[in-house]
Length: 370
Image 1 (cartoon, rainbow, N blue to C red):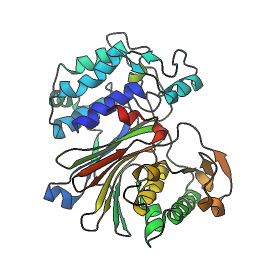
Image 2 (spheres, rainbow, N blue to C red; image 1 turned 90 degrees about the vertical axis):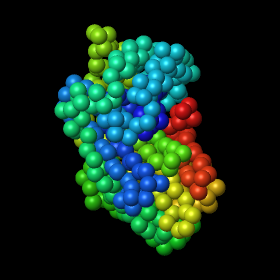
Image 3 (cartoon, rainbow, N blue to C red; image 1 turned 135 degrees about the vertical axis):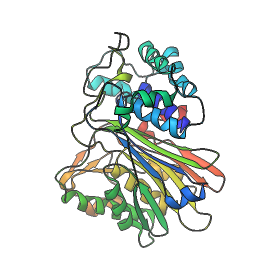
Image 4 (cartoon, rainbow, N blue to C red; image 1 turned 135 degrees about the horizontal axis):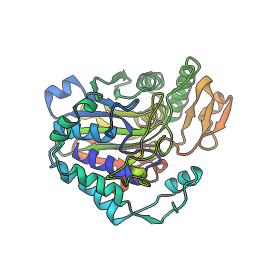
C-alpha cells in the first residue's frame, strides 16, 4: 500500500490530465499469502462522486488506507512526490498534447517543470500521521466505501474486478474464454460481448484515468485506478496558504456521473498458476487485456497488453485506436476514431516467486519511473 500511495501522489504531478489529488478511485487490496484473506478474496475500496467537504478525495482515501494497511511512516510515503515537485519532472508527450488541447500554455513535451505549490501542500500533510489525518477528516473519510469486488470464473481463470464496469468486463471475459480458444478468437468474442452489452445501455461510464499495479515481497496485491471526469478536472485548484492557483496536481473535480475505473486481479486456478494484478483505465480495456492474457503464452506479457484494442461506445459503435485487426472484421459496423488518451492497462505478473511487469505504451511509460 505504501508504494501504491506514493505512486498515486506522483502521478497527480506527472499526469494531471488523467488524475489529481481530488481524483475518484477504485482499489483492490489482497493479502494473498494470508490464508484467511486468500479464502475471502480481495477487498474493494472506492471513493468519488460530488465532494463532501474541503479535503481532496484522493488524499483522504490514501491517508485512510495507509493508516489501515501501510508499513512505512506516512511522511516517507509523501516524500517521493515532494522531491519530484521540487526538483522538476519531464513533461510527457501525452501531457503536452492534453495541455495544448485544453489551451494551457507552457507544457512542452520533454520540457522540465517544477511545482512548488504541490510540494508545499504535501509537506503540510507530513505534520501528522495518516491515522491522525483520518481522524481529523472523519466526515470525508466516511465517503470511502469498502465492499467485495465482482467475481467471474471461466475456463480455469478467476477475475476479480472493481469499478462501474466490473460486471460488464466479467461477463465479456466469460463469453470470450469459457471454451478454450486462441488469442484472436478470444479478441473477437470479447469485443462481440462488449458490443452486445453496449446495445443494452443508454450510456457508459466515462472520464479519464490512470492505473497502477503493485505486488510486494509478502504477496500483497494492490490494483489502483484513479481518474477525473474531464482532463485536468472541472474546477480551479485548492488554495494552499493562499497560493494554490497554477498547480494542476491539486485541481478539483466534480463528476456528475460515474468514472470508468477498472482495477482487477486475474488468477489461473490451476496448480502453480499465474496471477496478474492489473490497473486498467476502462472496463473495455480490462476485458480485452484479460482475454489476451488468458489465451496468450505466459511469456507474452508485453504483446498481450500492447495488442490493438477498441473502445465500445453506446449502441455498439467501435472507437478504433488504429486499423481494426482481421479478427474483428466481422464485427465492424459504425466506427469512430478513438480519442486520446487511450485507456491503458498496466500489469504485474506473478508466477511462483517470479515477477514480471509491463507498462502499457498508451500511458506513456509513466510506470517505468517508479
